[in-house]
Length: 328
Ligand SMILES: Cc1cc2nc3c(=O)[nH]c(=O)nc-3n(C[C@H](O)[C@H](O)[C@H](O)COP(=O)(O)OP(=O)(O)OC[C@H]3O[C@@H](n4cnc5c(N)ncnc54)[C@H](O)[C@@H]3O)c2cc1C
Image 1 (cartoon, rainbow, N blue to C red):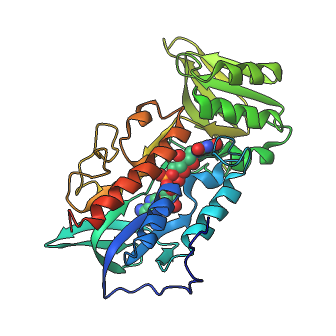
Image 2 (tube, rainbow, N blue to C red; image 1 turned 30 degrees about the vertical axis):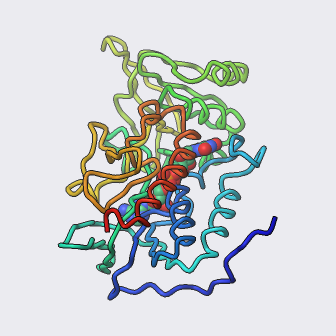
């Protein structure tokens, strides 16, 4: 069988004064998948994103992506990018979208640097980011002991004592990453550990982990860097000070919806509500990937893999609709 691949494409300029058929916000797996379909359908497309890769860049290894028994997140993204860059699509990378608005028959996308782009349809694929504890000193001590990414930062804590806050698979995966470097890991868990038993057994075997179930973090202490945390049992009658140099916050994630929150309907978790065709509450605005209310995401601590493949297949139906000019 012969594959028909597009000819080699030169960089497509980004233009402010034209009407794009489509603007894709976000270049994670969902945005790039959408880009491939848009390219194949020859839609005049602009992708605007803070980076290329999104959360998958943080995945040390992906073992469930069909066709690859094992691949690092970074390598998988490199392949995605190679595939999408074959098409004549404009990319504006390193750009944050701050506002999406609806004008009569088109949409306006405003970027942080003041640039404004116009289009006939939008796909929001802006994904998610780590949830913070929202407590005093957390912000100031971020990157000074407070971290939201064990994959990125675990090696910096060699021989040190650290705490991981959270109970789901991401939290226990962080504990597992840290067992390779840290001297001791405290896992602070609101009620009980919810991660897969196989993962919990693995970290227990390391002999480095102490679990504090039914505890919550009350305080993060430290002047220039993290020195300790104060935890309190949920009944409120026992307080423990743990001397740690690192605090890994793994309590889930939130959807990146700020720029669109006044335009499209969100659910109670502040995710964009879509139907099975990726349509949002506004005709012409679609959403795909982790930013949406895809049903799997009610279980979002555990089932990221299903979410991503679901997004890809949703994009197919989405583009069928765009092509039929159902909304444009
Ligand atoms: C540590 C870790 C490990 C993981 N491991 C796996 C795994 O093994 N297997 C698996 O299948 N999944 C894994 N996942 C989940 C997977 O990475 C996500 O499900 C997937 O990345 C979601 O893709 P997305 O495109 O919807 O969103 P994201 O990946 O979040 O991408 C969103 C994109 O939008 C951009 N963006 C956000 N806001 C704006 C804005 N305002 N303006 C412009 N651009 C914006 C971001 O910069 C990013 O490029 C892992 C995730 C993490 C964090």
